[in-house]
Length: 212
Image (cartoon, rainbow, N blue to C red; front, side, top):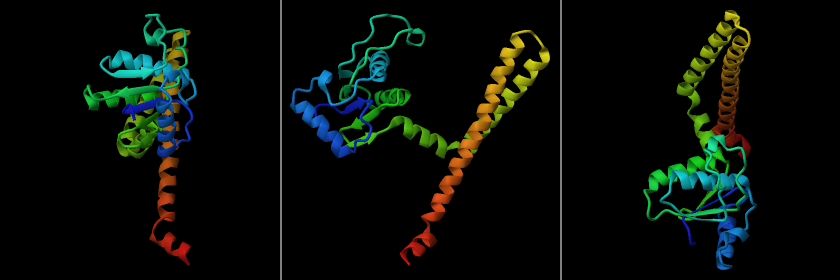
């Protein structure tokens, strides 16, 4: 293949063989990014814009046409033009740092990364969510408890101060932190319970029963 990494938004149901076949056929036909076999998405456009800013030394091939407005990304009021694909050479850059940036931005925009070197289709957002869930206990739980407790204190304090408008805003912010902490505990608790049940079903006893 011509590049090391390929990033796109859709289709999302490709295994490594199918992804390699699509990319190979596209490159044999000339490799024009504008006619690549992927769906156009503004998320790919944003990804390309941020990647050019964060890693200017990367060699990118893409149909992304960055918005010429120089407004900071966080303040931008307009979307990036849709793009289909970003293809990247990694040979001439610091691989570890560049790959971390690519992976983080792909997770931010929920994009797919095909690593042609390892023949892997990766889903950065799902992988990062799974890692966060697997490492939630106990460190993440402690941080969530601290954040939730702080949010509860802020909400109560804001309500008791009784300053018009300001108290309401502070109480809402603190209440939001508290509710999100509770939601996190419930979600991670259910996930951990599901993993334990899955492990119990796939254990030696379950395997023996299924073989009878």
